[in-house]
Image 1 (spheres, rainbow, N blue to C red):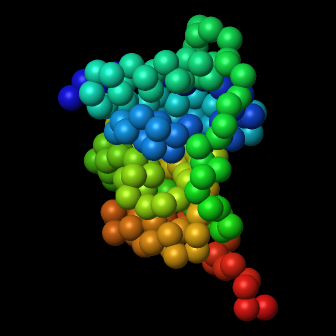
Image 2 (image 1 turned 90 degrees about the vertical axis):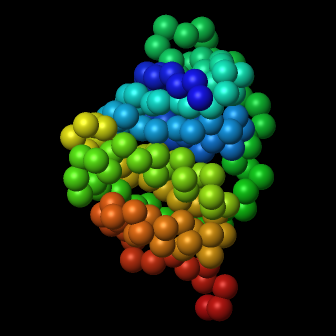
Amino acid sequence: MPAVDCELHARRDAIQRPILWRLVKMFNVVTNVRRARLTEDYGYVQLRIEGSTREVEQAQAYLESKGLIKDARDPAPSAARPEEAVPQPNTITVRLSTANPEQGHAPVIYRICKDFNVVVNLQRAAFDEEEGGWLEVEISGQLLDVQRAIAYLHTTGIHVDPRQRSVADYMNL
C-alpha cells in the first residue's frame, strides 16, 4: 500500500475544518498523525497518508487545493462540505494523551473517523510520533455515536480527558 508523508501548514481558520475526517471519508485513505503543533492562530501537522496510488494522489491534490500543503497553489473556492451530511447535534471536546511513545504510531483518529458516524476535528496539539504527546479533538454527531467513539478511545489505552462533564441532547428538559 503506497504511503506518503505530507506537511500541512495552515492558519487557524483552515484548521477549524475537519480535514482528517474528510480525507478518511472522501478518499478512503488511512491517516496517521506523525507530528502536530496547533495553537490559537497557526497549525502544523505532519501526516502519513496510506491507500491505493489513486486514493493517495487524490487526497494530496485535495490538500493542495485547500492551500494546506506549503508552497501549494492558491486555495480553491469552498464547495459543499461533506461533514454537513452527518447530523452533529452533540459535540464534545476531548484531550487524548499518550501513556507511552508506542501509542503514537496507532492511527486512532483514522479509526474514529472510519468506524463511527461522527465528525472529528483537530483543535489543538503538541504531539510527536516518536515521543507521544497530546491531541485535543472535537467529536460531533448523534449522542449515541459520540458516546461509542469515546468508549472506543478508552479501550486504546490512551488517556481520554473530556473537556466538559458530559454530552447531552437536553431533549427531556
